[in-house]
Length: 248
Image: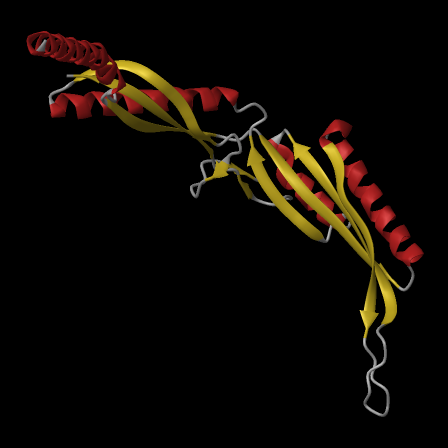
C-alpha cells in the first residue's frame, strides 16, 4: 500500500514538472516577441529661399469730425479716391477687401471749477476704414503706396511680401529635409557599427507655408516718384522625423 502511494506521488510530480517545462517553452517566444525593437529616430530640416511675387498691403484712412456723419463722409471721400487709384494701377476688385471698419467716439474729461471731475463728454468721432490690397505687380508697389498716401491714407501701411503659390518651394524644402535626415541616419549608424533597417515612420513635424522675411534685400523696386521698396526673399522651411529599425 505504501509502495503504491509513493509510485502515484512520483508520477504526479513528474507530470507537474513536465507541464511546467512545456509552459516555459511555449512562453519563451512570446517574451522574445515582446522585446523592444532597436530603432533610431532622426530629423532633418530643409529651407528654400525664393523671391516674392506679391505684396499684401494694409492701408487705413482715419478721419475725425465733431459728428459721426461728418467723419464718415470725409472718410468715404478719401477711401473712394484710394479705391479708384488702385483700379487705375490695374489691381483687380478681387484683390481688394475692406478688412476693418469702425466708428468710435472721442471723449474728454472736464473738471468742474470746484475741482471735482465730471463724466467724460463726447467731443467728436473717429472713423476708421482699412483696405487690404494684394499687389501682384511689384514694380508698381512704390507708386501704389505713394498714391495712396497722397489720396488720404494716413494709417497702416503694413507690407507682407509673399508668394502666390509657394507649393513648389515647400516641396523642394521637404525633399531637402528628407535627404538631410537620411544622411544623418547613415552617418550615425555607420559610425556606431550597426546596420540601418527599414523605415517604420515618417512625420512632418513643422512646415511654414507663410513666408518669413529675411534680412538681406536682393531686389529694389523704386522709381523717381514713388516709395523705394526692398523686396528681399521669403524663406520656406520644412522639418521631418524618420524612425528606422536597426540591424544588429
